[in-house]
Image (cartoon, rainbow, N blue to C red; front, side):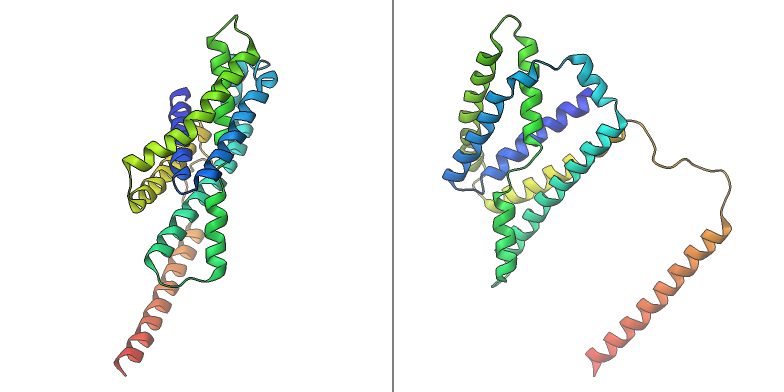
Length: 229
């Protein structure tokens, strides 16, 4: 489980960096300052954590389910940005409402990056015993302040095509969604299997499929008649 969570955190960081390639330098610097201040000011809370407590969090079903909700919301918003960006690039004139939605989603930096930064700060404090906690935090904050715009610039140079970056962003979010399901389910099943068949429910399902198929055939025949006339 720890390996899956680690891979998920790496993907969140990559996704965050890739999203910054669609923003202007001023906005990238602004979110870099916000992330750096978050890291520098969270050290009093980071030193209160322990490896045992983090392991308990990962084994807590209720907390993991709450985390899956946040993860799902972010993945949906990022995928919506990808689809809107692809639609704007390929379609003609778009409505103002769609354009404003695209701009709002482009400004959305992501929520999961902050728990990832906090987890990285906790891990760094554990790995450097005897060093001042505030010094570790502000050194990491300085690193974040430099790495976010530098990583965004490097990705933009390595992947100059916007379409390719957009596809990669969409696929990265899809992978995050899959790994998020694996990490949050944690070996549990939502529904227990049964050995008996509910014939009434099966008959209702078959009837629903038959009615839907019949309605679809009727609608298609009507449309075909309109095209032929």
